[in-house]
Every structure is written in structure tokens, then in C-alpha cells.
Amino acid sequence: MAAESFVPLTLARVLRPWGRRGEVAAEILTDFPERLKHLREVWLADGSREPRLAQVVSCRLHNGQVVFLFAGVASIDDAEKLRGLEIQVPLSERATLPSGRYYISDLIGCDVWEEGATIALGVVREVRELSEAGARSAEAWALAVNLAHGGELLIPLAAEICVAMDIAARRIVVRLPQGLRELNA
Image (cartoon, rainbow, N blue to C red):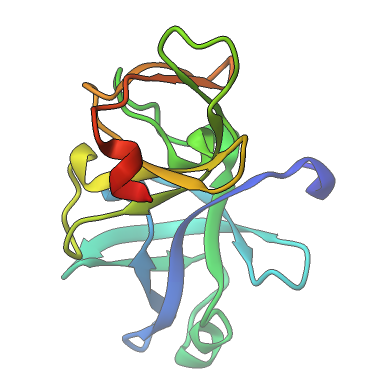
């Protein structure tokens, strides 16, 4: 794969050596940790250099982390050199989501239209988690929309409010509940 065509998807980040034989413990950065066990080839990246291809010899989930062994890494010293590296795959290999679920990166930049409106309300700038740490329900998230006329509107990411989401067309249609605009003022 040519480095200039590589669009990365980070699945984990190396935390430290694990054991004495070159394994590393990594922080899981995916909602689909089971897929990590099936990886045979990944890219290791630190953001400052070209990512490098690495062969996965073994991978297992352990106490909320993932433990990798890469080909050519056989000691604590070898493993220490991997500390902080991101474990990536091409974006094209990301997991397929079930209907009605979306990647945050796909929502950012979408035009937001109020149902029946002739001009866009604004553009999704970010997706914010609104709930307590660790909660993962759709209602716990909100679209932060930069309004066309200035300002920001937080719109709960709920099916009753976000009534049509066409990611390919980069368009989200919303039915705003009464009082939502005032709540955001």
C-alpha cells in the first residue's frame, strides 16, 4: 500500500511491554475489540514518520486491554521501542455498522436540515458525549451544529429528532422538539 494513499484507522495504542518475550499491552480504541484477535497485518504509527507494516503473530484480549506479539519483536527491549505507537488498519477495513448506527467521523461535516426547510440549519462541527463517562447509548450523544446564521445548537442524537440521516449525501434531517433552541440559548 502506498503511504500517500493510506488513510489510517487507529484500533489500539501500545502502552508498555508485556512479559519478557516481546509482547506489548495496548489500550483498546475501537468499539469492536473482538476484531483485534483476527488481525494478521497492521500498521504501526507515531504520527511523525511513515507508518510501518507489522505482522501480528498473536493477539488476545486481557483485562480490558489487548496483548499483541509482532514478528521480529522478541524481547522487552524490542517491545519497549513500540511504546506509544498506534496500531492501525486502512480506513477501508473498518467494521460495518448495523443500520441506524454511524461513525462519528461520518457525521462531522454533514449539513443539518430542519424537516421541511428550504435552507440548511447548519453543519455538524463535532459529536459530543453528554452522559456520564462510560455510557454508550445513542441518546447520550449530541450533534454540535454550527448554525448558518451564527452560534451553535446542540441536537440530541436520537431517532425521534434525527429523522433522516443520509451519510452518502452528507445530509441529516432533524425534527427539533419545542423549546430546544431556547434551551441552547
